[in-house]
Amino acid sequence: DTAVSQTPKYLVTQMGNDKSIKCEQNLGHDTMYWYKQDSKKFLKIMFSYNNKELIINETVPNRFSPKSPDKAHLNLHINSLELGDSAVYFCASSQTSGSSYNEQFFGPGTRLTVL
Amino acid sequence: AQSVTQLDSQVPVFEEAPVELRCNYSSSVSVYLFWYVQYPNQGLQLLLKYLSGSTLVKGINGFEAEFNKSQTSFHLRKPSVHISDTAEYFCAVSEPTVTGGFKTIFGAGTRLFVKA
Image (cartoon, rainbow over the protein chains, first blue to last red):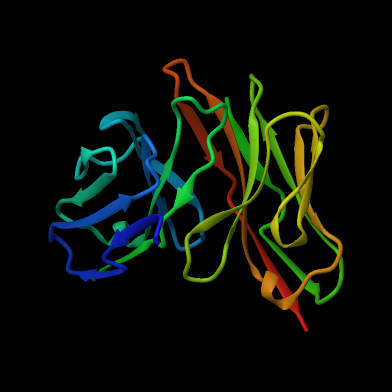
């Protein structure tokens, strides 16, 4: 069984379009994350949700809007896509409550290409 | 402020040779330390972690890392690498926040390239 899954795996779109990436985890974790990995492999946290509540919101443009309908899902919607949004986006999850540390489990990534 | 520095962006090494990937961190509080591995076109997976106790921790695939508090380092080592170890390796630091969660910072990554 896939622990953290993302759809789609690849996404190619034109500048100015709006797109969404979906993430689901079946690990029963209470915290989920979105990361952006650029072409140099640098991994940067974008958002984190704990039990559907936003707890980390790094300096990300307002065009990016995360949505967590329940604690097993965290979707990422991007408006007015720009060339610089091209990257691989990773979803991750971890168990925070009752844990003394934070081991994260990552999805396979979504490669977004903006033309 | 919390930060993670991986001193080498790329490490080429011959098969069966030993390797060390270096990681230094800065933090004002006690932290938890991790190494993750990313194989081509895949997500990250945990290699090993240091939480407390023995400063030498062993992980999967024959890797180990040593926590050195005085030098704020957490270097990753393997005595004999295989071609299949070719991947990107990330050091990460996690510290608790006042809200009860954790903040995790990843290093920039080290590309390990094992040559035949």
